[in-house]
Length: 296
Image 1 (tube, rainbow, N blue to C red):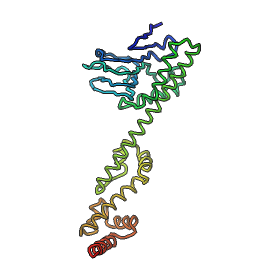
Image 2: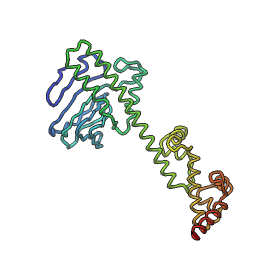
Image 3: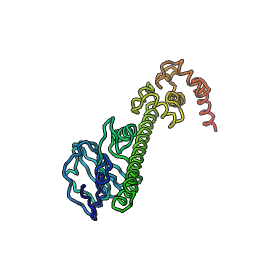
Image 4: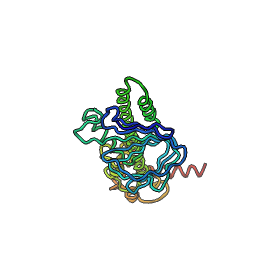
């Protein structure tokens, strides 16, 4: 059996003392003052997840710097060289959990192969290393520690269950991060369309900008804008055309090309569809409106 720690600054347990496979150690760290930097090291074939709930920390992984803050869950992947660099350990409070990265065909924590691969796939999908939601998983880890150092006759099965809950909640938080990132990318594309309506915009190019497949992009854009991407692009071109028709004497054919329409016939057709008027009728009505406004 490995020796556990139970001090004011660090409470650490070893899961192998419970016979739970693939989980190595869990520690709750509370630095009440700055500590010495931790030296560069790796965890061969193992993840390390830090759940920060107070203060901040600086990490360096493979030459890149990261700063975590309360509320963040920070993930370092197997075999990565990491440390705090030249920084001291900050005054902070966090958990860290070390566990095996399980390959396809094997089982994690005695779960099924399908469940195992679901968890591993989610963990490896975190490109930014940061997941928000430390407050969601912290109570689970607090209860694991409490049970471990208790005399509860069912603590092993209860801790096993809690760790399954931990990974379940973590996977949900990772999904939320992905959804948020997708929404941000699609909104960025929508803003690009708003400011580049005169360009020849293709829906497939917009999907590439959002890092989504064409079908995914169409579905997500519809959810956000309440219009299909093609419909939204055309609407923005028509809005731009209305301004040109109102404030310039540019010929209709030139207006069509100015807003990125491939022909004056297509432009006229779309303009009538979205405004109920031809471009000429719209220009005339706006001129008359302007004259009436001047008289009034």
